[in-house]
Image 1 (cartoon, rainbow, N blue to C red):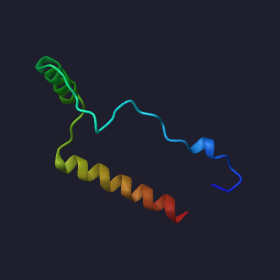
Image 2 (image 1 turned 30 degrees about the vertical axis):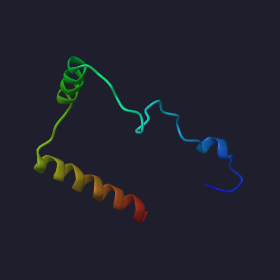
Image 3 (image 1 turned 45 degrees about the vertical axis):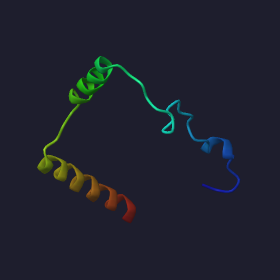
Image 4 (image 1 turned 120 degrees about the horizontal axis):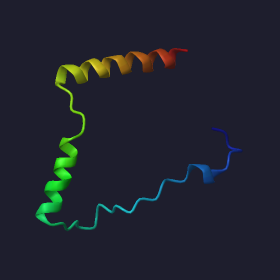
Length: 65
């Protein structure tokens, strides 16, 4: 990044979610949302630690180049 680069390229992406506005949904909508989350990929703690260690090694190797 240099000073000559336009600042327009670094604008944050506008989001419609507002943490200060309460969220209202029916019980069925909440359960649907929870079921969608549960369908995602989950790792055991050991698997997560392996993935993290691998990522960390790759990240540090790139920083040392």
